[in-house]
Length: 413
Image (cartoon, rainbow, N blue to C red; front, side):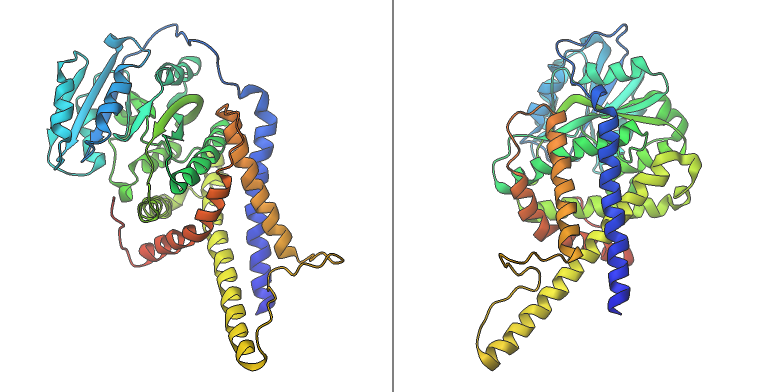
């Protein structure tokens, strides 16, 4: 039995290391092309764009969100802003109605039906060449839209472009931990974009050609992850998705462990169930790296992390149980089951080295994302990331798997 567990462990950890090394090699091969543009980006032609902002009880953030759209460095006559109140019960509708005085802003109000229904209302009224979404808790950099649109200009086969997303004004260790994670996401999404394998088009200012929805249809509920499902649908239909690494959007993130858990439970549950829905694309060469790398890598990550945490938990339980027996029998003497320090002896167990390698590669991912975002101060919040996520992540991983098995849909908030 122990041999079987060891084989499983080595296979999973090899695959996890392989994923990280593959991304690193992709970065090294393309590092000279990943540069942030300086100064103003000028387009040969400025296409018309509609940005829909779905709102539900966002009175604390919606003003700043809309204001950031109005301040975009993009011709006002080429930009339409749809503000869709999805049955809010707070003062959101009153706030967005104040923006109706702007000629390029249109306000909608509907009964609550979920984010995808608010986005689809925007699509129904859209007559521009491009359309996109901006979450009501996010704010755009003034140059973000024109930088995104430059990707469409240089490649007519590009059907959607996502920005780089950063955490807005973190105030506690939970938010700082997410700041490190979002840097890693910038790096990973850029690498996936380079190999045409992006699996999610996030709510904060992903822009689509109108052709995408004309050919594939509107957004779907998709287990409360409509931004992931539309990316899966696009990949299945061979539509190219890119990531504009120097277009920045800043988003508010969960400020407590409970809200972080709820959000990540929804995300992981969405990944698992969208993958089940689109299981027919797995390991099919015709769907490219999305099918052969991105989705399998996500599956391996979930299984490997769950297995590793389970193994550590079991060993820790056995250690505590053994110490209790030892304490009752001969008194207390501490020794760790994971690593015993001896100045004349280095523990060479493969488990320790594999864990160190994995953690080192994750740190490299965060640092490279930090570099792509052109931040100069070393991201010390990496420490928060490991301390918070090492404790909380197993719970949302196991819960998402359990919810999938029992068909329990996690709540949005």
